[in-house]
Image 1 (tube, one colour):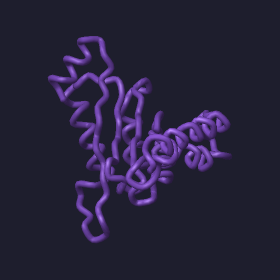
Image 2 (cartoon, helix red, strand yellow):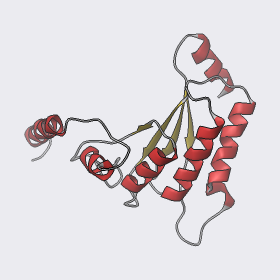
Image 3 (cartoon, helix red, strand yellow):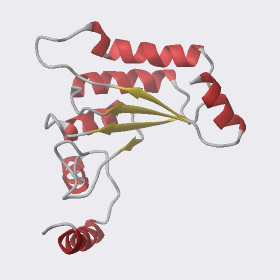
Image 4 (spheres, one colour):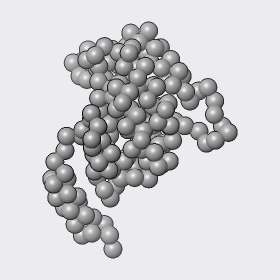
Length: 166
């Protein structure tokens, strides 16, 4: 991270650090998959003085728990300057993608990754509209125009049917 991060930063580009998260099946918990573990990784990066503009927590397996995500993001937010953006990425593999996104937001994440149906859910990111609905009535919003979303989804489905579905 150090050499590449400095090259990116010195070239005037945006450098994002990524810390990978994951959860384990019941009975296989270790100390390596806790909020404290992930926060320690961030502390090591900060101690190394690697320049970066944003931080991403990536649960590529979609198996991390909402509690670990909330605690990790909350502690990271305390450690980072206010202008450093925190992004969260997950998949819906364990069926908890919406809850994990909500936990990240409540912990202080600035950005979450979502996707459009029919490419959402399962081993993909949670659905945009589902996440939008889950945030209704809260202090948070995805700031989307759901009517435009429906139109885009309709066009996407037409393309899928025309080019990819036999």
